[in-house]
Image 1 (cartoon, rainbow, N blue to C red):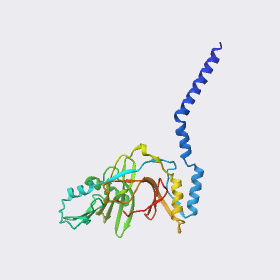
Image 2: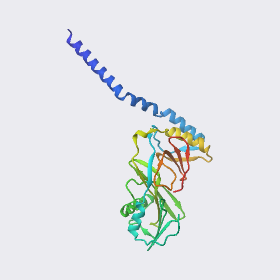
Image 3: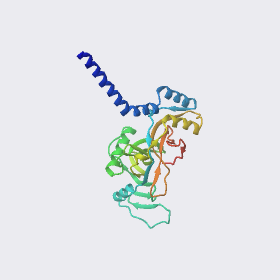
Length: 287
């Protein structure tokens, strides 16, 4: 028997067995990835369609599809407790059913809606320690102050800034285990180097059940739906952020479910939420 030929046959048999096993172990995942991924050519076509309709995509977008489940959440009171702990504000008599709770203290006014947002007004304001040469520097000083005071829970991430009169408002979003919660937010207004206002609404998310996961529409499909739902834009509108997360209106309830959404942020600060299960437009609530 030819020993060299026998070795060659064994080597090819071994390689064939490996290929067979790899196909059965990973073939399904590879086929699924190929089916869900949007090719470069398809993506360029999407961008051309957007531009023709007056939408300029100026951000990187995840082109792969994902799976997700509804996320169950409940309102959090952690910041209200922290504000009362820090400022020791006095509680005035109740103002009636459905009215916000008002807490008055020296240099501070706290307005809290049960199960709703917290609004903190600081008079004349709390100066941020350090010098800031620009907005990025101010944002860094602000984040350090919020962390020191316990107003920046783990996962809070910077989103954008807006201006209102002489105030610069820094907008933050809640993030939990890598999931963006567009309904959970913290807005901090800075004027003259001092923090003057704080508005926040945080959520307590539960761990979603993997067995309830379903495929969500791709960002490409969500962008097509955005154009279909909003119609052509004139003058053109710039899309500066595109993220997958969770969003719903605020509910007067102990707990509720939020669907996954694609959030498209325009350069004027307006957001558009496309339900990642249905492709429908979710109404925006101001924050």
